[in-house]
Every structure is written in C-alpha cells, then in structure tokens.
Image (cartoon, rainbow, N blue to C red; front, side, top):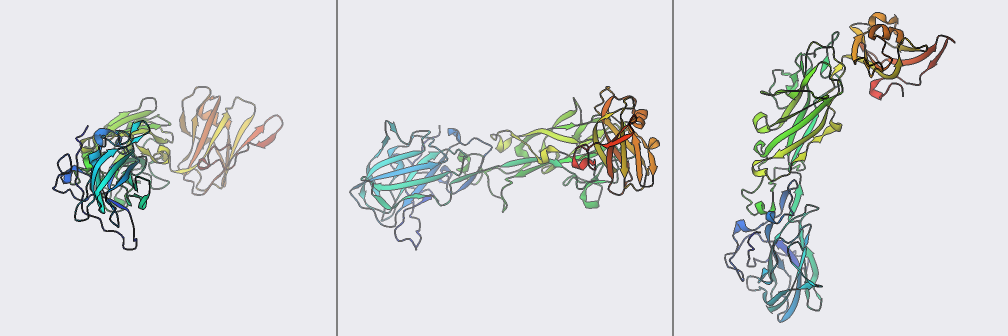
Length: 515
C-alpha cells in the first residue's frame, strides 16, 4: 500500500461570470510548498494534476495501481463561520485505495480561506465511510473561519467501467445545501481506452489476388500485385509485393496505438500511479512495448501446402498440423507497424482453391507496458484471409453428386460461356463417400461444347475421378470472360424425364449452388 500523503489547499479557481452563486470543484494544478495538517506537502510528481487517459488492458482497481488526487472546492460566496458542515466526496467508477482520515479535509488558502476544526469522518450505519474499497466518504467539520475554498486529498483506484470522476456535496449539519449543493468534475479525472489494438486482416485488394496458375495449378501468378503496406518490395506498382511462384501473401498483422484517438498523439498511462509523473509515466506506443504476437492460421485444403509464416527477413515457415499452423513474432525485430502473412506451397502438387483463416491470435506486452494483460487479436471479417483461387469463373459447390454407377444421372448445363476451353475446365471434388482424396482435375476432354453452351454428366466425372460414391463438386472455367449460368438437372434413363434440382446460378459467390 502506498504512503498516504497530505496536501494544503490551493488557489481559488475562477468561476463562471454568468453564475452568481456556484459550487465548483477542480483538480489541483500545482502542489504548494506549505505542509498540510499532519504531514508534509506534496510535490508535483506526487499527485495527478489533470485529466488523464488510462490503458484499459491493465486492471486499475488494484490498490498498487492507485493514484493521489487533490480536489479544490470553491464557493462563490464565503460560507458562514462557527457552523458545522457536511462535506461528502463520492468516487464514480472507482474506490478509495487508502483509508480516508479527518485531516484529509484541508484548509483553504489566501485571505478567504476556509479554516476547519474538529473534523471527523462519519459512519454509514455501522460502517465507517472512506475505507479502502468504499466509493464515498462524509466529513463533519466546523468552520472556525468562513471562507470560499478548501481541498480534499485522497488515493483512488479506477474500475474502467466508465470515466473516473468525483462528486462533492456541501451542506450544513441540518442538510441545507450550500449554493447548488452538489457538483461533479466537468471533465472526468481519467478515461480508459484500448492502448493497443492488434488486427489481422486479408491483404486482398481485389477479386483476383493470389491467383493459382493454370493449367497445373501448382504455382502462383508472380505478376499479381499482392499488397503488403510497410514491408520492403521490389515492385514499384502501388508499393505492393508480388507473389512468388511458391509463396503468396494472404494477410497483414497491424498494430495500432490508442486506436480511438483521432486527433494528435496523446499520453496513455499504464496506471494511475504512473500518471502521477506526467512527464515520463506514459506509454511510448513503440514496438519495444509489444512482447509477442501469436497467430494461428487454418486452411480448408492442405494438399500441396507446406505451411504458413511471416513474409519478412528471417520469417520461418511453420508446417501444418491437422490443417493449421501457429507462429509468433516480435514486432521490434521485424517491423513496428505491419507484418505480412504468407502461405507456402510445394510447387509440385495441384492445389484446391484454398481459404486461409486466422482462427486465433493473442498479443502480450513488455517494457513499460509489461503490466498490460495479454489480449486477443482482432480478426477482421471473421478472420478470413486472401483466398488462393483460380483465374476464371466458378460454379458450385454442388453437393451430393452421385457417380456413374447410380441409375439417376446428374446433368450439368453451362450457358453464356465465352472463350471456351482457353486454358481448361477443372472440377474440384471434395467429401467423397468412397474415401477418395480431395482432388482438382481437368475435365475439358470430356465436356460437350456447342457454341456458348456446354454440358457433362456424372459419367464424365466418374471417368476422370473414378467411382467416388457421392461427393461435392465445384467447377472452374478458365478463361471465361462473362457471367455463367450453371444448372444441375437430374435425368432418369428409364423414364427419359429431366427435372431441375432446385439450384439457381450455382455461383460460389452466392453460397451452396444447390440452394
């Protein structure tokens, strides 16, 4: 517990000219040299002298984090001498950190100073007010000399449930209000904010970022500009980074200090105690205050994927385990503002279209921010990162597609097709009931094309993939330059009846193609 310090009253604050009779309170701006009753005076670094901003990542209701406040109370007119007065101090969104004593009610200063005598701290029922953990205290004191100013000094914690503020009630012993009777600080003594916000988000700047190259679909298009602001790049176009043949940038980790502040930089203090030294007690908002950023990235298809890591000097590739990989980095070593996340592939396997997702992440703190609690990373858009995709138009996913061994045919009809078979037509099979591995294979050799219309059935799919039982299929039409209309129909060879399956366009952008 910190040493409880006393303060002599300070100069009278100026009152609003429009208010003829007004009770007023303010935080002390300076510490006088004259000692107060029972102890020495405070110096400037002993008290919080102005409204401050606190880091909400650190618990502020801990006594060790408490700060000392000096509250000036002034009246527009001199209060009567030889009267007994009740002075009530309330803490809003905070509590007392040390027990309040009678001599914490301090005489005023100047020729119109209020001088108290016989001060006591009152009880609330069976309990003494102003104890550690309480949020209010009531003094009963006699004014031997009537004046228009006095002070209260106290140690306070903050809950960060709302702004830390103070309210004073002044009345006679018979509960007659002095002037308006109750007053609250016009500006809260402390406001809690998010000191650091770490965010992971997709780096995708358009619909065709991180493209897999047809026809093998084993590598990335190195001409595609994959933005990653803040990292060195040989690509002068928009300051971005081109994907390498076997590496694609899929997201950025950004670190913002005091993200809610839209104005000039402002000091954010880790605790009320640190705020007593306004010159050096605040956080610097520098990489050295970030301990470790940890992130987990998952993929929905791991075939041909080596792992996930940071696109930075010395960034290691972290291998997948059960479809996900975790890694950590120190921004002080890699970069203060942004780190790019990359996915690495073998370069020898045909890839499915892959959706990487940031599934979890935390950031810890060190240095001047060491007391801040580890917090979760903000995952924009549910954590979805840049999708690894084919350069074409896609239809699907169509679920529950039977293979060629069943009696009922699945017939796929695609219309409004331009530039037919420029680079190929590919089918991606997943969730085979026969246990076949997920695969992407060309089917253009089995597709029937008539002008801008093409069709194929599950028989052709079976000839390419084998007897898959039932599976889910998506189709990618490389080189298609217009919006496709994809439909799945069902045909009964026995009755020669063709029926719709109930799906609309089947475009993956609109969800499951069978809905």
